[in-house]
Structure formats: C-alpha cells, structure tokens
Amino acid sequence: MKRFEDEGAYKYSFYSVLRRGERIDVKCPKCGGHASIDQRNGQLGWKCYECYAQAFEEPVYQYKAKGNCAVCERWFNVEVTDEKKTSHRSTHVECPHCSSVNQVELHAKPTYQRFFSEICAGKDPVFGLELYFLDNFRGKIIWAVNREHLN
Image (cartoon, rainbow, N blue to C red; front, side):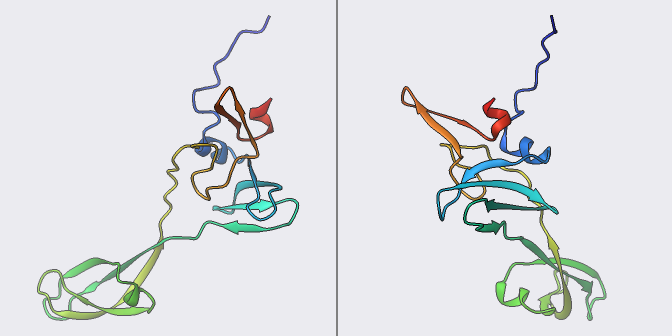
C-alpha cells in the first residue's frame, strides 16, 4: 500500500497552475469553444482552439524621470503618471528639492504584478473568462482548472 502524500492546499490555484507552466481551460468569449490561458515568454494570454481567437494581457509600464537638477545639481528620481508626458522620450519635470523645471529623459520599466486573485464564481481573475469545466451541483458551482484537476 502506498503512503498518502499531501499535495498542498493551493495546488490548483490560478497562480500555482500558471507558475508550473500548465494551462487553464476556459470558454472562448467569441465562439464559446475550448480555449486556454497560459504564460508564454513571460506574457499571459488566452487562445481558442476552435476559432483561433487570442488575446494577451496588456503590459503596464512605470515611468520615471531620473537626472541631476540644472540649478541645485542634486540627483532626483521622480515617478511620472501624467499620460501626456509619458508619450514622449523626455519631459519637463520639477525638481523635488528646489522646484526648478528640468528637461529629463523618461525611463519606462514594465511592472510585473504577478499577484492574481483567486478564481471566483467560475471566472478567471485576469480576463474574466468562464472556466471550461464548470457545472452546478445542488445549487453550488463546481469547477476544475484543467483536465488534471478534473481527474
């Protein structure tokens, strides 16, 4: 007889499945067919196997203006959130020390916020797609993220 080994409480959580490189089966929003969410080249996306529709998570960037002030010559590193300023390579930013206006180069850094909330009401937390293996049993929703979880 084989000894029981606990698989862990969060083996089939959204984050754990993606981190292991497995797929999450969902329904395509266009045709209702079989689609899956997976992580390719560090980018999260879904792809339908029937109508070949696909979408990827839009990258989110954090913009910073870094440089030395032309007046007080002190180093500053300021986060820029104004969308009008972030569309250019350089912008005018106030020095946080002396309030003089400087023209500095913007540095874009992708933010990898890989904390996902859990699956709720049978939908994935990123794209809001309904899980493929989803059913009601005695008035309660039961679901599985992929075939392995279903077995």
